[in-house]
Image 1 (cartoon, rainbow, N blue to C red):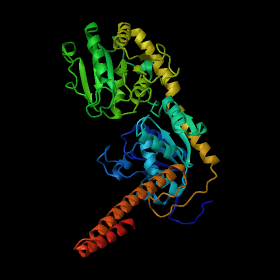
Image 2 (image 1 turned 90 degrees about the vertical axis):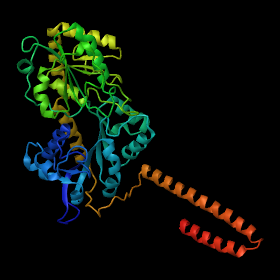
Image 3 (image 1 turned 135 degrees about the vertical axis):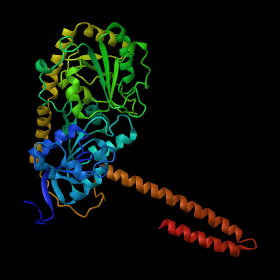
Image 4 (image 1 turned 120 degrees about the horizontal axis):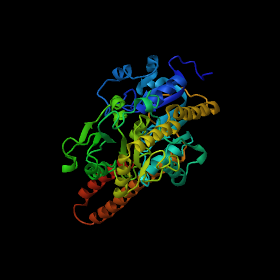
Length: 466
């Protein structure tokens, strides 16, 4: 039974705290959180500034067109400020960059939480500031479970941060839509049966002037090497890249490169069935210190679900046997020459390429299928809700004051007190120096004027010390 009869309080089992929804900019959130809204007694609280970089829409407009299976579920999505009267048993947060600033809110309400710790979103390795944020979040007694999707993340938070391994749940891959109705034998467009070209694609966001972290420079290098050997070969780039970024050269003239720009999710329904392979030769720790991508990337997973052969790099060795090179996909190494030869061998034998693409499509559905991913996460949430012995706390006054006895907050308080002590010590030394100077001035004519200055200085220092 609820601990209070306050009619203003809305009770639920699961409170999802997120910085993107109700915008549909991030499809995995719509799929995952939409499932939780229908499967659990759940609510979503959209963090302040949710639309600053993803949409110019108003909150209500974005919520009204959010593609949920049951439109009635949209009423369970609130602004963060409007969610002040929501009391939950368990919170769910994705990305370190969202969880860390929410710690005062979670601590004040004594609200336990599950963190889904994807690469990106503030997660990086070997960065002192990131380590401190990780410790504050992961070592909090409110942290019940951490979902990690990559072995590098799992190993890092156990070995470096010191989280209890029992709290870490490894679920390889992410939540992407595999229930798309695509059938390889029916819908895949093949060369030369259904089209006159072989098509390689590169799909990635461009961040600023960076051309290397996602491997765009390597894609262009592969294209230059392969184009003279295969006149029917075409190259496609989806993202904010342009022909001027890297000169293509004569071999890629005459429309062999197509730049599609940045595209919404709906674009790929017609695009991927005509692509033969996606090339992703990303590099870790380039875009930002300690930053890395997951394996496979989200774009590669979505392409694989639509029958596109993944030809991808794994510089951090994240595969760990899940996919077999040459059977389930193609693993590229750091040697461009070897990578070009492997791609060329496949392009020379289209039937072998399509056979491998079919195996890729099937294996991705087995490992990364939507139902499998959602079930693993839903089972974890259910277990935490069932074992919870925490009484639901009704919301208190809306404030960001943290009341916590966690180790991380204690360290923060110690640092604050040390800073205050250093400031007081500096003020004391200033007073001692001033006192000595005034004592000397009293021995010379005009000391009364100096005395008045001393008293003014003493009063000012006293106010500072208070």
